[in-house]
Length: 90
Image (spheres, one colour):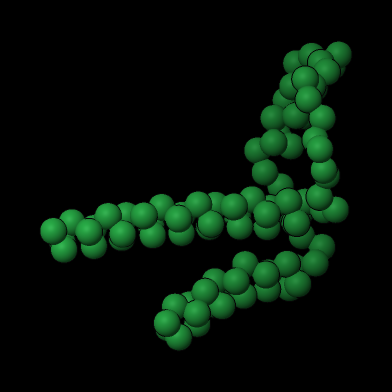
């Protein structure tokens, strides 16, 4: 249990520390590139939907996206491990 908590703490530190080390860095993604390309193709394009909440910065948005991916990967890994354990029992 302690080993897992230590590994989780390391992962969290690896995700957060770069945000403090590279304060002026831009962590852009494909969304911004796609928006620019659409603007070049058709300047009168209007998006269909608006965001419900806009994160305060692109870095926070990237952090939330990565956190969502990590939670999903953890859930999938847990489920696969659970099914494998049940298979070995029976």
